[in-house]
Image (cartoon, one colour):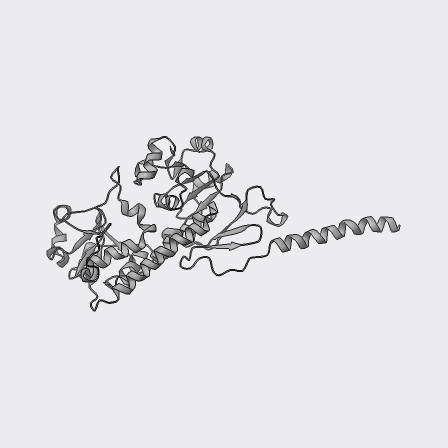
Amino acid sequence: MKLQKTFFIIPFIFLIFACKQEKKENKIIKTKPLIKYAKGFEIQKFETYKKLIISSPYPNATKAIEYILIPKGKEILSTLKGEKIIRTPIEKLVVTSTTHIPMLELLHQETSLLGFPNLQYISSEKTRKLITDGKIRELGNEQDINTEVLINLQPEIIIGFAMNSNNKAFLAIEKMGIPVLLNGDWLEKTPLGRAEWLKFFAVLFNKEAVADSIFNTIEKEYNNAVTIAKKSTTKPTILSGSIFKDIWNLPSGESFMAQYLKDANTNYLWSGTKGKGSLSLSFESVFDKGQHADFWLDSGIYTSFTELEGANQHYTKFKAFQTKNIFSFAHQKGENGGLLYYELAPTQPHIILKDIIKAVHPELLPEYEPYFLEKLK
């Protein structure tokens, strides 16, 4: 009888010891906050793994998505069974937005990219060379990705973006066993918050130190530009956007573009509106409020006053048109005609802010040459 009790007690002791070990290994490492500006994601470090929490994977999301990042070769703890597991560092992946490309390039991970939907939209010279060399495959449309090609490529993950939780293409891909990480950088309210999503990519490649160094430089230059803009004693009024199919689209008051205009020490006429995206207004509504605006920034695809007038005669009625104070991000184009601004903007907020300051407060940056934002010709 004693022998039976002994055999029962021994495995029980081992079970308790194993549970204690797993609890110890699961303990979070307390460090200073890893994310400073971004609101849509969080990184937690534990002793044997990391947790990537996406709280804003798509607009109006009510539930966060969590991924457990475990080093390749490491055992998966029993307490993590059933979680979304990703093995790091990632060596092969697919991304679905051109804004993801510069993130990979900053981390020197562009060669990890195997495929992309609509390759013609990529403007980066470095990545276009990889496309020309046959290193990156065409995947069709982001809403209807070619799954046959995808299976052959065998990426470890796909980084996508979505409008809701019911993206049929991504749900089908996940059923194939390929994890889909939803990137919500475009939902951030601030330029620095959007740029900080570089750390989202970095944790997948175990390159957090590289991302921290890059972001710290961006942050410092951006905040220096904000300080310079505050020296201006005037706050010019700003109009933005243009008409598309009878609708004038311009930034909402809580968008990252509205934050740029605030940080540039301007008076954006729609700063009091709600929402992170765009406002869709009638011409009459915009004209009523913006006809006397001092500057018109981001006039869409137009790069000259002749083009703008040709698109709509009513544009000539605005004060900014008459005083020739209209600026566009459409001047810099890639090999296939894509606007570099749309691809590079998330990783270059300090440059964009200085471009805006140069346009509206030129006396504050006399030697500065703008890169993205230039006056219409």
